[in-house]
Amino acid sequence: MFQDVLFTFLISLSPFGEARAGIPYGNLTGLPILWVLIIGLSANLLVFPLFYKGIELSNKHLLKNPLYKKSAIYLSVRARAKTKKVIQKYGVWGLMIFVMIPLPVTGAYIGTIAAYIFGISYQKSLIAISSGITISSIMVATFMYVI
Image (tube, rainbow, N blue to C red; front, top):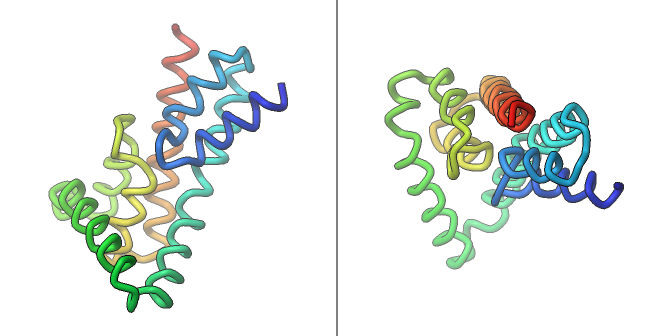
C-alpha cells in the first residue's frame, strides 16, 4: 500500500503525467478515491513553487552555458506557442483555463514556464495554476469514481 501511495505521489509530481496520470494510477491500484485525489493534488500543487524557483535559479546561474541556453529557449518557444492565444486573450484566467484542461501538455509545468515567460506575477500565477490543477484533479477523480 505504501508503494502505491508513493508511486501515485511521484507520478502526480512528474512532468510526464501529473495528477492526470497519478489519480487514475492510484485508483486502479485500489486506493480509495479520496486518498488518491488528496495525494495526487498535493503532489501536483508542489510543481509550481518548486519549478518556478528552479527556473529562476537556473536562469540566474546557467544561462551562460550554451547547452542550457539552447534547451531553455526551446522550452520557452514551445510553451509560448502552446499558451500565447489563451493567455493574451484571457490573461491570468487563460493561464488557469490552460492548466485546468485535462489533456497532455496542458499542465502545471508548461503553465509555469508560460507564467515566467509572460511575466505574470508569482502570486497571480500561483493562484491561477493552483486553481487549474485543483479543478483538473477533481474532474479526473470524478471521472475515475463514476467509472
